[in-house]
Every structure is written in structure tokens, then in C-alpha cells.
Image 1 (cartoon, rainbow, N blue to C red):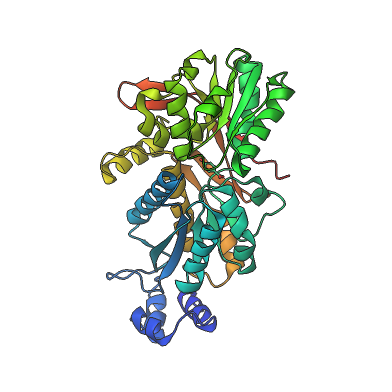
Image 2: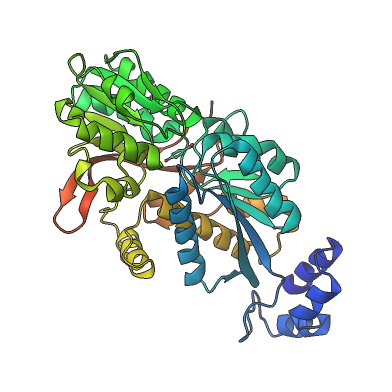
Amino acid sequence: MSDEIEDYLNWKLAGRIDRRDFLKLGVSAAGIALVAACGGSNTVGPTGPTGPEFKLGVVLPYSGVYAELGNSITNGMRMYFDSVGNQAGNRKITVVTADEQVALADAVAATKKVVEQDGVDMVAGYVSSPNAAGNRNYLDGLKMPTLIANAGVNSLSRAAKSPFIYRTSFSNWQPSHPMGTYVAEKLGKKKIQLVYAKYGAGLEAVAAFKETFTGSGGTIVGPDVATPFPNNGDQTPFVQAIQTDKIDGIYCFMSGTDAVTFLKKAAELGTLKKLGLVSGAGFFVEQDVLAAITDAAPDGAITGLHWALPLANKENQDFVSKYSKKFSGRQADVFAVQGFDTARVIVEALNAVKGNTTNKDAFMTAIAGVSFKSPRGDFKFDATTNNVVQTIYVRKTVKDPKLGWTNQVIDQYPGVADPGK
Ligand code: PHB
């Protein structure tokens, strides 16, 4: 039996094609057989894909502390889907979005909306760790194919791993674990105070840093500066809690507007200039933050991340220039790359299964097998953690004559995989 007919029967058996959808297909079973007989596999007619629509539910923050991150991820997805004509595996891809916001209750409501009202075939998104973790059981219980496009919560690559949930971004451990070694051994900074947004992602990031930093002879100088999340209030007391006279520097996890308001206040109070080292997970000084703070940027900050704007590889140069053309001069950031890669994984997996997603295990196997050259470098999944294996770049914040404030790559740790436990 040809693949087309088999796919068609599978959809029908699974009740996925009602009469209306069937008529929309515009072909009879005999027509399909004819196409197949002509050797057409994955056939897309001149009028576009003929299979049923593939609905993707995107749950991302479009308001609150991480709104910029949600917008960038969405832009990156749009850019990749547009590049393939919004279709794959002979199915038209339709995206429906819902606002993750900040609180878990809102992220749960957004997930239920796309699943139960919009009837999506797949879910992608989640920026904040508690929101990804808090939707995990619901998505896993439904066997809903899901790609996490940002949230780094370690447990999704460890005890709470699900065969239906893969991550295209990072685990919170990944960017920070190599940085402890780098700061202690390569930079020779041995007394560091930790500064972080006090919630899952901040706690996991600084814990990973601390492990390698103290393992390399470094000392954490307390007390930690742990800010509320999200941190909407006056930053002064938190900035003043940095003990500039007792430390060699700080290691930070903050992102979005938390990083923007904190860094602005630290620049205004002259604290940044008194520090021998500002270091952290790269989100702290990622392009979204630098665009908002401009000259309040911590010049020379050293951070770890899986991407940097000036990365020289061809895929990145292409991505960066097309992104800014498509989005009216807006510079790409790591979140846009994650969105772009997430869309690519979906498209390649849909092509691999020829659009048949009724067998969820087979679709997840196709997802797991996707690998390609991303703007961040080689992209592939690690079978033991359902998470991407990738290079962590050590970056230095500089004001580049062409790019403006950005992060230059000064070193790298290739093939960093979450330990899975
Ligand atoms: C997270 O909550 O996992 C998170 C949020 C923002 C980031 C990175 C991680 O930039």
C-alpha cells in the first residue's frame, strides 16, 4: 500500500478526518491512489498541501517580565515556517497562540485553551521554568507532542522527563555549569557573590555554577542577593546588598525586564564600575536586555550561553541578517534562535513521518532524530535527557562599532549535555 493511502486511512481510523475536512482535501481515495501510482510521495499540488491542517498551539508570554522573550521566540518560529511556505509533510501548518503570562495558573489556562478549545495537534513554547514544570503532567497525560522552546527547568531532562516532551532550548544547568570552572580557573576570580531571581531557574543556574566554581577552589561570599520574581519594585536595596569591597565579582541569573531594571539601577548607583567581574548565564546581558539598557550595559561582562549575535557560522550570519530585515531592523537574540530551531524540528519531523502524526510514538521518534546546523552551531537531541546537546559559548559584553552592544565569543565548551540526574 502506498504511503499516501496508508496515511489517509490512519487519519480516518483515528477519527481525524471528518466529512468537511475530507472535502477540503479536494481528492478522493482514488485520486490519492492515482497520485501514489504516479510515484508521488509527499506530493504537494500546485495549490499547496492536500493533507489535513496541522495545528500548533504556541504558549508563550506576551505580557509581563518575559514578554520580549515570547515575542522573539514567536518571530523566530514565524521566520522558519514562512521559509518553508508554512507546510510540511503535505500539511498546512497553522499556529494558534495563547499568552503564558507569568503566573502558573495563567499558563495552565493558556495550555488548556489551545488543547481543549483550539484542538491543537502539538504544543510548543513555555518561557518560565515553573510554567513548563506545572504543565508537564497534563501534556504527558494527553500524550501531547510538546517542544519546550525556552524554560530550562532541569527536572524535564531528569526525573520528570516525558517521552512526549522534548526541549529545543537548554536546561538551566547547561549555560552555568561550565562557567564555574571558567571563572575560577581561566579568570582566576575566587570570591564571588551570587545574584539571582529567586525562583526555579535562578536557583538551578547558580547551583550549577557553584558546583564547578567551588570544585575549582572558588568561594561563594554570602549572603546571596536573591530578588523576588518577577521583580517589579525598586532595585536599590538589592543592588546595595552587593558587597563590592569583599568580592572579586558576581555571578547572576536574571532575564527580561528583571535584568533590565536591575542593571539600570546598578549602573546608576556606580556599582557595576566597582566590580572586578560581572558574570552570569548569558540571558542577563542578552540582546533583548542590551537593546533596552544601551550604555548602562556592564562593559566586559563574561557570560555563558548557547548562542551569540556575532557567531561567524554561515547559518547564523544568514539568520541574523534575514531576521533584522523581516522584523524592521530588530536584532536577533537567543530566544529568536530557539523559536527558529523549534519550528525547524517540527517541520523536519512532519516531513519524516509524511504528515502522519496519529502514531504519537512514531512522531516523537521522528522529533528525537532531527539534527541540523543551527545558527547556534550543531543541533541534536540527547536521547537520555530529551534535551539539546550544544556548545556553550563564553561571551564578553562589548560595544561593537557595527553591531552596537553585543557579546563577543571568547571561548567555548562544545557538546555540553545535561547530566540527566
Ligand atoms: C526559565 O524560567 O527557565 C528561564 C526564563 C528566562 C530565561 C532563561 C530561563 O532567560
